[in-house]
Length: 188
Image 1 (cartoon, rainbow, N blue to C red):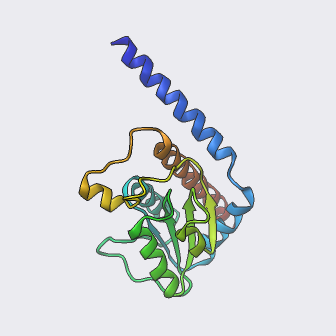
Image 2: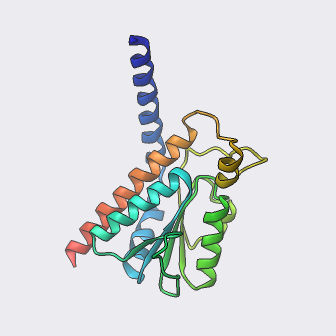
């Protein structure tokens, strides 16, 4: 039994170390424009699938706590996007079908696109007005790079920490953005 606990602690330590390394590599120059974009647009829409989707939902709840109008794409009460709105798309691969389609449609409606991804040259990255590169995510299976396809077919990703590092880093990043937003709002 002790070996199980020791291995869990070993995994936890490895994840924390990798998240720390990943967050230190964030490009500071990409973060200010993201915060300013959120503060200067009418409404914030957030999209992601799988664990990235959970991070998106959590972020919207934190925005609402700040009095910022936020919506999760795909919920029944989510309005349509329009000019002067912003869509934040979270996708480690930058290729997740639903996330990419939401970003394309929001862009067509005139919304600004902020991407949180490990791959700036991905289709999502190229579509973005603002991009924050969060390392950690490795490309999925070439046959099924999409979350929904993997979920339906049962072709789950390998159990390693690459996805975990991206998601944990993205969650911490989003919480740090909330804290910065709170500070800027309170200075007004």
